[in-house]
Length: 103
Image (cartoon, rainbow, N blue to C red; front, side, top):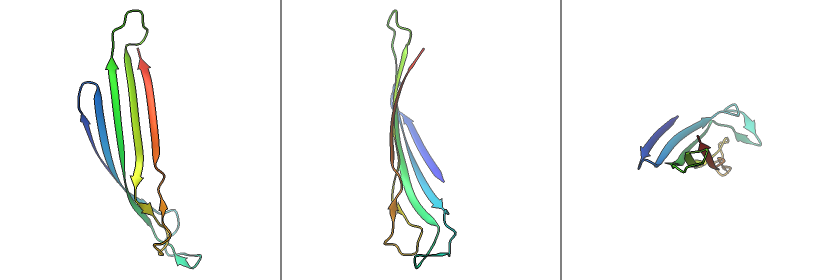
C-alpha cells in the first residue's frame, strides 16, 4: 500500500515523497525452515524523488526543453520471514538519475 505527496515548488522544480507498507508472502507462513517457523514479511519504506525541467529558447537548436530527475526508492526498515527476529535483511534501496531533451 502506498501513499504519496507531491509538490511543485516553482515552474521548473517539483518533488515527491511516497510512503509504503510492504507485506510479502514469498514463503508460506507456518513452515519450519532451519528450525524457525516462517511468517509473512512486513516492512515500511519511503521513496524520495525530484524533477527539474527548464525551457530555453536558443536559435538554431533542435531541442527547447531540458529535464533532469532523481529517485531514491525503498529507503526502509529490515524485513524478516522467520519468527526469529535476529535474522532480518534490508530491502533493496535503489538510486536512479535520468535526463532528457525535448523538442
